[in-house]
Length: 164
Ligand code: HEC
Image 1 (cartoon, rainbow, N blue to C red):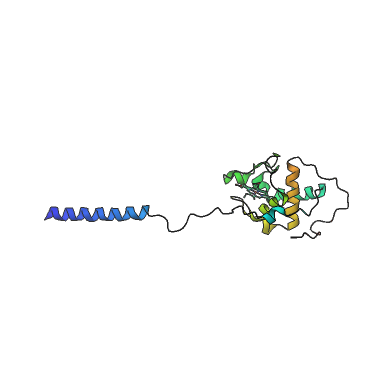
Image 2 (image 1 turned 60 degrees about the vertical axis):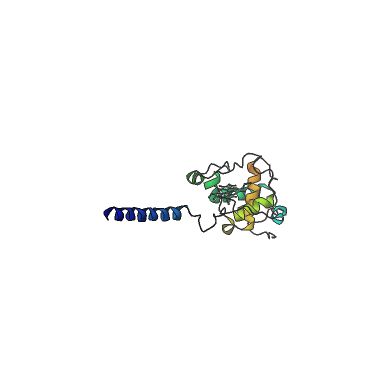
């Protein structure tokens, strides 16, 4: 009798284990989460023309915003060595290398700044469109492109109308 109880207990125990194992190895009910910020750049985004002239004034304005909004990840010089990015173990591209952005149109960069990319969070809500275009111009200058000299006749910041 005793051994029967023992066997029963063992069987029950084994049954329990089985059930547990099944639970653990069952496929997750939810689909694997997609990348937080997929790079969805439409043909329209790609073709969008930069309405802000590539001038020293625009580059200087872009640099100022970059220093406060982007440098923490992208590094003060845009080389991808920002402190926050290092803390978060993010791999950040080096904008000082001409190759990094050479295949990107201005419109693409504008779109990426707005909606983010992979591990980069969207920045659009914190910036005006003009800020974003100035940032694009600054990024071009980072890799060595030389902007037009200032004429002193440039419009004030955020006074030009930027078409969508
Ligand atoms: C929290 C960190 C973080 C901040 C803040 C941030 N970025 Fe990024 N950025 C990244 C990372 C990481 C990538 C690389 C994403 C990938 O492709 O894996 C990236 C990629 C980019 C790219 C795409 C380069 C390419 O061609 O693939 C652009 C353009 C860019 N960032 C511009 C900016 C600008 C401008 C700002 C400030 C307004 C900014 N980022 C703020 C982390 C950041």
